[in-house]
Image (cartoon, rainbow, N blue to C red):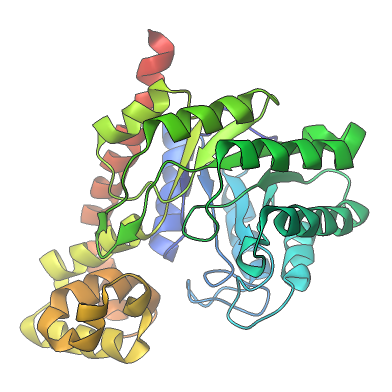
Amino acid sequence: MMHNDNTRLFVGPMSKEIVDNVIEYTDTRKKPLGLIPSRRQIENSGGYVNNWSTKQFCDYLHQKTNNVLLVRDHGGPLQGNSPDDGMESMLCDVENNFNILHIDPWKSVDNVDDGIRKTLQILEKVCLKDEKIKFEIGTEASIFPYSPDDLYKIIQSVYKFLGSDADRVKYAVVQSGVQISGTSNIGVYNRERLKDMISAVHSFGLLSKEHNGDYLTKQEIRKRVVLGLDSINIAPEFGVMQTREFLKTAFSKGDFVSAYQTCEESKKYSKWVTENVRLDPDKNKKLIIEVSGHYNFTKEPFLSKTEKIKKHFRDAIFNRFDEIVSIWDDMEEK
């Protein structure tokens, strides 16, 4: 698929069902969505989503549609399951026809200049491998907070380095203060910071993208779109939505107990919850299942109940897609 500047919503592929719904929605509603696999979800060595390797996932997607924009989310050092420089993973993405690579070395640096230097090093290696693939640069505040001036400097440095290839950069990540804990967005929205970042991004003719848009209301997203936000990433929210469907429509009491045991043993909840919850997970069983169920969809009791929730989940996720995409549609009609 050619790059589509009208792709507003980028969805984390937290499960095979989410991938299938993104494909169906894009093909039937004629509204482009993007998929943003992280390295832990989909990786050349295998990930937790349907146990897919990068090649298996890409083959599955490309056999079904050419309408979904495929973006590697947080490609770079220290973003996988074991410490590495991220290059093997990224070159595998190139070979498997990703549309866009998010170049994100920011976990491995202490200052903006180091982040720029590492970004340029990765860009150089990828450009030697492939002449067409596009890029997203910058990162979210939970990994490395930066100011609007920092972001301007990052983009300017990348443009100078790439020269005539600068048009291969499509997105830059803006930060408005969002942060996820449990199943809520607990960030403190900073309108001026976001406005200045969007302005910096647009001054280079790039598209602005915000990460961690999970659990925001339609009104909260609209505030951002009014300022010029071009697109948003949402990931764990859809995994939580699917998990809640299991809890609501498919699980018996015995299944609930079994699901909690599976999720507690996986320890995948620790990233999303507070210290208090980590210290006493038994008091927060439902929350533990909600925030880490999607890591365990290939295990029981989730696996054998997946068919049972498919229709309800499809309706719920399509409604949320509609709600978000319509914000930009409404703005364009005015």
